[in-house]
Image 1 (cartoon, rainbow over the protein chains, first blue to last red):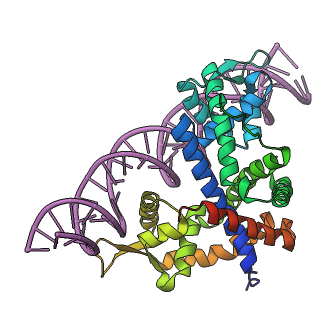
Image 2: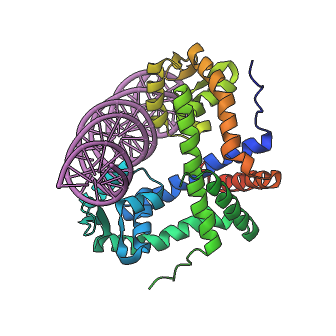
Length: 153
Length: 153
DNA sequence: AGGGAATGGTTGACGCTTCAGTCATCTTCC
DNA sequence: GGAAGATGACTGAAGCGTCAACCATTCCCT
């Protein structure tokens, strides 16, 4: 016979299910907005955001997968589609012949310049506007803690 | 010329990116655990959880889609796979010939009985254990608020 | 009664994600 | 120098999610 499980208390369940549900609603609605207005999926946006914040608008595949928290194969597939649409390109790496850089194209930059302000507005409208500054700070605290505890790096 | 966008402050960015990242890590790790130990995906688990909490272990397609917050077509596809694996079945609805019930099979019940306690443990270990009771309560508050504001119903 | 709209649900196509396997290159160590 | 293993990245197959279109039944209104 094993231990009786400690089921979630009502407030714990609200917090857990709340995170799942809130996240889905936010991503779904912000994503639809990006897609319909700028032809970018949420994933595209995240990739471009990481690339444009990197020096020289480029990153190695592995580093990009790292900051995104994506599996390398997922990134590889996704970039293949983005390359086909002309918003990023691959470039060979000089020091390591196995390696490859991902670089934002001019079209990619333009898409980001158009999308970013609207996306930030969406994030405010959907999410931040409903929180007090104290709640925002607390959320930052909480997520940092949890991520630090469970991120495999 | 349009308004200058109000970019996110550092703490706002930590909260926003934190939600995205924390959610992905939690779902990924809890999901892998469910999958490897019980052959259930996170989605399977959620579906079974809603069904087993319903009277008579059954729900109409539409009602299930509603509580899950899923699109009907997604649910239809997903259930087709679950039916094929024998963990749920469809049953015709007496009062409305268009309608269909989804019912948990004995195999589905067994899978849930095995998986639920371990899943709850995972949720505690990955998530709740890193929060103080006050933080948990605040998170429940925050998610309820945001969901209530942006859920299209 | 009966025709149009609304509702409940399914399907097909296409893009996304994961898993496992592969190839090429680089590093380490003898 | 050369073999063994590590690393960087790609690929194919299969399951997942979304969108648009669809069919069947029921509701509503005259």
